[in-house]
Amino acid sequence: MSHDHGHACSHGHEHGHAHSHHGHVHSTPGPDDWNRAFAIGVLLNLGFVVVEAVFGWQAGSLALLADAGHNLSDVAGLILAWGAALAGRLAPTPRRTYGWRRASILAALANAVLLLVAMGALAVEAFQRLQAPQPVSGWTVIVVAAVGVLINGLTAALFMAGSKDDLNIRGAFLHMAGDALVSLGVVAAGVLYLQFGWGWLDPVISLVIAVVIVLGTWSLLRQSLHLAFDGVPEGIDLLEVHAFLRSQPGVTGVHDLHVWALGTSEVALTAHLIMPGGHPGDAFFLEMGEILVRRFRIHHPTIQIEIDGIDDGCPAPRVPS
Image (cartoon, rainbow, N blue to C red; front, side):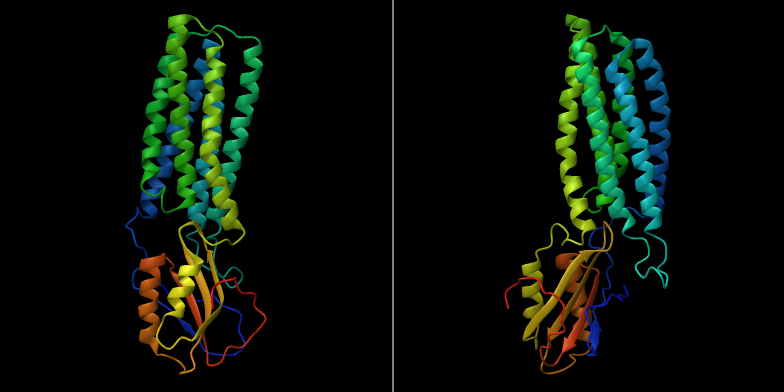
């Protein structure tokens, strides 16, 4: 059961807190599983960065060197996401009543920005190399990049289970999946270079991959920025939430409805319900809490009951009355 103590704007009326017996709708890996996944991912990718940088320099391959730099940025991204996941588990304090849960949102945002910056640097370098194509060691490129596909693909698989439910984990997953795609492109460049001797192919494939990754990262950037400004989390329709609350027995009106993300995997709600009949009893809130979790994945609802609708100055979203 989750005990929720968020506050709506208050003017002295009684607050009813809806509680949920089921903390999560889907079974996802626990904190220890994520710690293991992050540790494995960081060690694998850090080792591969060293190998890729050395062989990339020896082979004279921009694609390998750029991929090594990208992998290094992804190691930083993994560490950032890992730190945010750990920070989100810290207990609330009198100074931080929600703890550090928002760290996961900020980490997802930082990861998106980091990935975009890395792809921008890759594009600049590729354009420079296009102006003066250089020969590369095809077999070295192919072998090293193929190892990268394996390592990055394995690391991405570690985060696949939570990529749909947690934006912070999704950021880590996109980084690793993007790395696997980059490495796959490098393999293709090496094969075609051996076959046709096209020196321009290495930077061209780097540019194409950079564009693909930027397009894939844009959604992460948009969603994390939206949550950072307390936007309604994706997948939750505020009109449906309002309609659900309004349809409850004894409720004649709903106002001051707010829904926002505490972190990348937890959602809070505050609302004022006008109930002329008075407090409906604890069973009302327990049942409402269960439905809010099951239907909307809202785990931290705080409900304030009003006998008459009193305007206390809290801005309300434009939803049907």
